[in-house]
Every structure is written in C-alpha cells, then in structure tokens.
Amino acid sequence: MTVQIGVIGCGMMGLDHVRTLTAAVSGAGVAAVFDADEERAARAASAAGGARVHTDPVELVRDAGVDAVVVASPDQTHEEFAMACVEAGKPVLCEKPLATTSEACWRVVEAEMCGGRRLVQVGYMRRFDPAYLEMKRVFDSGEIGDALMLHSVHRNVDYPPSLPASALVTATGVHDIDIARWLLREEIVSATVHTPRPSGRVRPDFQDPQFLVLQTEGGVLIDVEIFVNAQYGYDVRGELVGERGSVSLVPPAAVSTRRAGMEGQAVAPDFRPRFQDAYRAELQAWVDACAVGETCGASAWDGYTSAAVAEACLRSLSSGRTAPVEVKPRPTLYTESAT
Ligand code: ISE
Picture 1: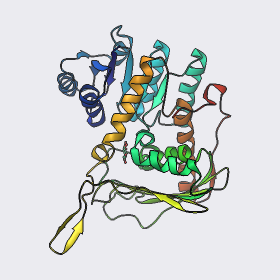
Picture 2: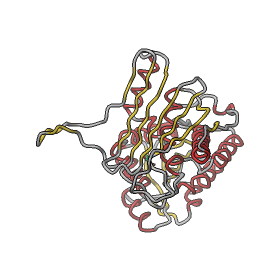
Picture 3: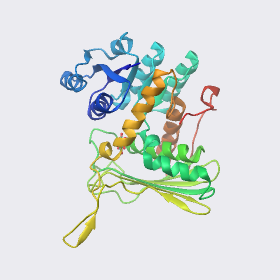
Picture 4: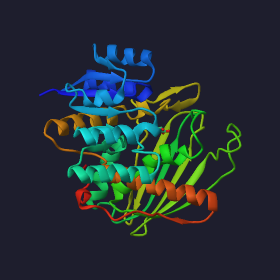
C-alpha cells in the first residue's frame, strides 16, 4: 500500500520533507501540497513529481486522495492544522512545536482523547537519530548505571530575525527538553535559566546564549546550552553521565582533513545535513505506522509536556528564579509513549 501524503507548508523544512518522502521513503507518495506562497507550493509539487496544489490547507486535509498529512507551516499555525487532521481522522506528523503554548497543545490532546485514538506525531526527529538511539541503547543496557547528569549543547549558525526571543526555548531548546525526557524516561519538574553575557550580534531584547538547568522527578540534572548565533556551524552535543560511566554523541563526520598544520572535521551548516538520517528514519517510521493504523515517535502528550517545560523556562527567565513545571496528569491514552 502507498500512503498518500499531503504536505502543508513548503518552506525549508516542508520542501525537505517532500524531497525525502519522494526519493528516500518507501511506501509513500506526496499527493498534495499547500503553501501560502504559491511559488513555493509549485516548487514542492514539482519536487514531488507532480502533486496537486491546494489553495486552502483545510481542503488539503479533507482531500479524499490524502491519507496522512505533514504539517511544516509556521509554528503559530500548527494547532489549527493538527486539529483539522484529528477532526478528519487522519494521521498527522506535525513539526515541533505542536503549538505555541502548552494550553494550545492541550487542546490537541483533548481533541485526540475525544476521538479515542492517537493520530498525532510531533516532529522530534532526534528520537530517530542513530547517535541518540545508540546513546539510549547504552543507557538502557545498564552499562553506565543510573543516570546522574545530562549535558546538552545546541548551537545554530544564526537565527531568523523574525522569530521572537521566546523561540530560543519554545522552538529550539524544546528539542533538548524532549530528548532528555525520552532518554531518561523521566519527567522534568523544574527549570532554572541562567543568562550569560549576550552575544554582541543580537538585538537588545534577545537573550542569546541561554543556559537551562532542568531537574527531573528522580533528581537527574540536565544542563542545556542554547546559542543560536554561534556563527561557526550547527553543533549539537550531548553526554549522559551515569554512576559507572558516560556516553557521548560523537560529532558525525565522514573524514578528518589535515592541512596547513591543522586537523579537522567539517561542522554542518544547519540542521538538515546534521539530522538527515534522523529525518529520513522519522518519515519512514511514520509512513510505516500510518500504513497499519498505528502511531510512533513523540505523541501529542510529549508535545504538550515539552511545551510546559519550555514555559517553566520562560517563567524562570523573567523571574530569575527556579520555576516549577506545571502539567496536568497524563491521560491513559498516552500511558505508553511510543518509540
Ligand atoms: C530550529 O528551530 C529547528 O526547528 C531545528 O529542528 C533545530 O534543530 C534547530 O536547532 C532549531 O533552531
């Protein structure tokens, strides 16, 4: 069976998903696309080898020839389109964040509960990255003992000036929040945000870098450096420290070059090449799950919880104090978080 997919939002990430679905995912076809910018929609339709172009995103969701939907439109539209998919009973892979506030994420959770089944997967692609999967395998095997600390570094070359200052946490740091919950299988209960001297490249209201210290229910400390104007490359690092050892991500590189008295590996320019394998695996797993009526990856509950932790970070950033994470009890629909 070929799962016919509709893609809403054909900017950088949406177009990348169209290309990956078309060229590197089996059992999938891109049947329809939508973008507010018609030229971008036309480019994506041709990258898919000739998909239908919709001028209304909700029509795309209702299109009888669309089995499942990828939402890669701007963050503030995610809730509306994820809800439209849930209401239409169609599986949706929604880019992170699921919505811009935890309250809005909760509305998606409620819509799913109302329908009695899970249809939403949130695009936390790190869960499919071979290096993070290996880190989880080592930790789960017990080799390094119980977790004590998790160190995370998340650097971007630069940041779209259109994004609000809060996006540092709500759109970027949420990856580190989600991967910490997934790796440790523990909920985060509090957040403290420290603010180093800001980079001279950013506007005055924009605190970059930020240093988050998160604590889990079991007492594990997680530190996350977010620095989105690091200039030199896209750099994600992680080390999980256990009682008997530690496991670290090794920066992916095919070769190391020596010249002019130096040795080095290239650093990816952005998240697409760095997480290329993860995006492909995420899409393949989602398509495979859609084909048999199942879900995998991060759920709407995970989307809600990471948004709630991000909000605690924002409260700490403005108060200068530790902020508790406020979450509702986990509904039974989500007692088993997939993948
Ligand atoms: C960006 O907002 C993303 O969406 C990417 O997934 C992430 O890897 C990147 O660091 C973020 O800034």
